[in-house]
Length: 150
Ligand code: UDP
Ligand code: MG
Image 1 (cartoon, rainbow, N blue to C red):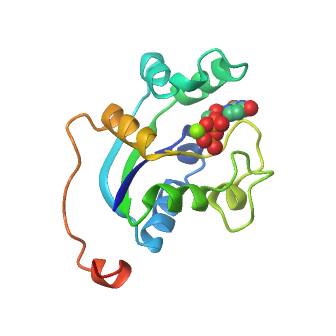
Image 2 (cartoon, rainbow, N blue to C red; image 1 turned 45 degrees about the vertical axis):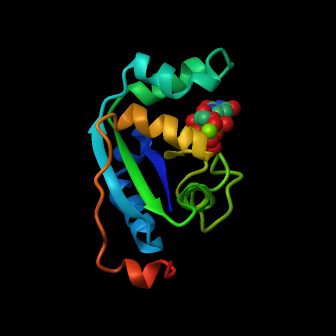
């Protein structure tokens, strides 16, 4: 089992896509173990996007991400990190395959609806930023039909 951090970015909320994106993850069988609506501060953005500080797109990325609220989601499931990244598609909608979230819902080179952790190290680091008090541990009643028997 893995847990990944997903952020629904400001464009997802402005466009009223938060529920539909969440539904796609639920349909896939990923379990919600954390959910928050919050406004990212520049400090939080610098922490979350530490690997991108100094890159040409960094300032624009921070103003986009801090401009209005986001939703932080912790999702759990078998290989959840890889599964969520595959569902998101490539970074920008114009390159993302149809059928992926970014591929189906956008074609912008600046706004791309969501963030997803890219490795188990990133997931652990990012989950502790957005969910410092930990996650909700519970057993979905449908889990035996979604997930392989252990
Ligand atoms: N980004 C951007 N321009 C770029 C590269 C990245 O605006 O040329 C933004 C975009 O919002 C992206 C985020 O920075 O989601 C993080 O970039 P990364 O390469 O980690 O892409 P991701 O992991 O989100 O697919
Ligand atoms: Mg990334």
